[in-house]
Each structure stands twice: as C-alpha cells, then as structure tokens.
Amino acid sequence: MIELTLENFDQEVVEQDKPVLIDWWGESCENCIALMPAVEELSEKYGEQMHFTKFNTSQKGVRRFCIKHRIMGLPVMSIYIKGEKVEELGKDDCTKENIEALIQRHI
Figure 1 (cartoon, one colour):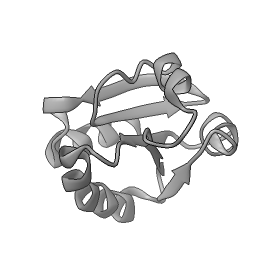
Figure 2: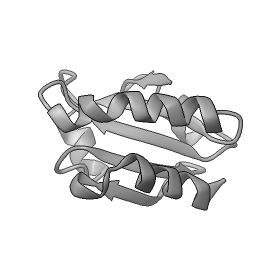
Figure 3: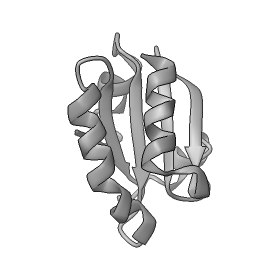
Figure 4: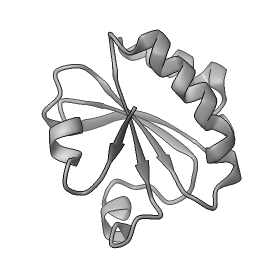
C-alpha cells in the first residue's frame, strides 16, 4: 500500500487509471489500526485491479486537506475514480466484509 502525503496525492490518486482505495486513518484511532491487517490482505488480493493507498490524517498540516475531502471522523475508506470520490464507508460500516464489497463494486 502506498502511504499518501500532500506531495504525492495527485500522482497516486488523481492521475491513476485504476480505481483507488484510500484508507484514511489516524495514529490515535484504535479502530483504524485494528483494520490495517484486513486492508493489507485485501490489497494483496485485489492489488492488480485497484490501487491501494492510505492517508495518515495525523500528519502535520493536513487538517484543511482532510476537511476538503470531507473526512470528519475515522476510520474512512474511500474509492476514487479519475480523481473523484465515488463512494465511501465510514466508522461503523468499516468492516473487512463491507470493505471487500466496496472494492468489488468498483473493479
């Protein structure tokens, strides 16, 4: 999985030909950290069909960026196609099964 930053976001999300999954997470979000192994496993399973990335919302200077992308709580899994957010799962809906169904809808 690619670790996103403000510097590589356009290259890794906007300019991708494949659909992109972004795992929005934070260092103090226990649910986010608990989900990581499941998302890594899905990345290995579907990595040929979808570009898997993660964005640490705890990075310095990203608050406005996260608000711009409507990330108000964590965890959030978003699907972007050609730079546009097309669907996302938030908080209680972020289970391995729901994330896999989200991926399958967009590959």
